[in-house]
Image 1 (spheres, rainbow, N blue to C red):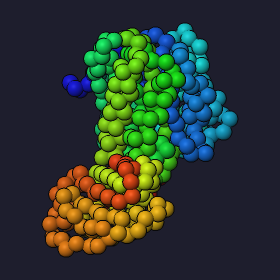
Image 2 (image 1 turned 30 degrees about the vertical axis):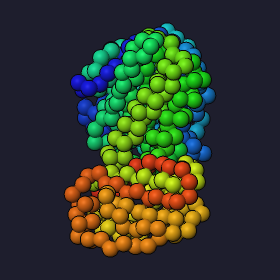
Image 3 (image 1 turned 180 degrees about the vertical axis):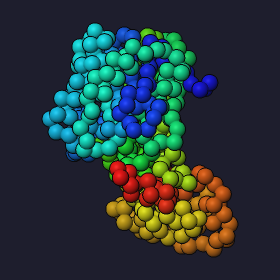
Image 4 (image 1 turned 90 degrees about the horizontal axis):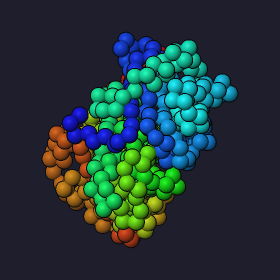
Length: 396
């Protein structure tokens, strides 16, 4: 925890409410801003979206947010009108304790789809979480644990900026390990800053940051019903404009990228983090289209799991991505090994290539086209026996 820097003016709690069957498992988190905060959000693009997504989306952007309440173990998705009423009730319970309006409270959930929330548990748990909220690293640690589902550990990132207008701190934490596909990556992310930033500027910054981070990771390409990233700026520090605001945007992007990588490397059952650099396309959008096709190929992912340098699967996935190119336009590297140059295969030591995959937790592929300046960096993982096992009996 020593490397975490905490934005000023926030309190956290993460408690055991009884939503989950595991004993002593934290499952209810609360983030409180001591003062009204500008807030923006980016949400799943799945047409089937969870009740908390719908409630938070209709409340953003805004200039007076006061808290975020999060439950894990139950997604409150595909739960109809009762699910919406329950999500709003979660906000009301927080608002009552803080003596603010329910519309100032944002809601997020993660877990199993299609099960009504056990509201008696939340009716008791949310006031308890509100009473126990405190500033500090231990409280943030509790909240970061309370949002997890199948993650193996918490995911936290922070930045401190020494700007002309003063010192600004950005603190972010997230969860995600499976059902991760672009738009958004099941993931939740919460980014907090003590800077003073207009809510419309926050939305622009958050959208740009998510596009190059959370929207550039994939585990199996499944866009969840609950994906939510929220950015709060409570103005405990300086007001940002001009160059300081641009520096702040870069730092928010860095926090998002850190968290996205932590999600990809923590993918359920994964043994490899796969980084794909695609360069030389006509546009960045085309580069992302190629990267996504390669990242979501089950054949590419299983080859990496099996330490098999079957590079033809990568070239083939690029070919069906929908981006127009000729074979001679493409070259491919694995690590520092050039395997395919300008449409022609090159001789390589298969044993060395297999050893590269076997002995490196993080592996790297570069696809270089001769079409333009468009580029994208995308993260995915291998597909393992453990992933299939975890997701074959997730609810049984």
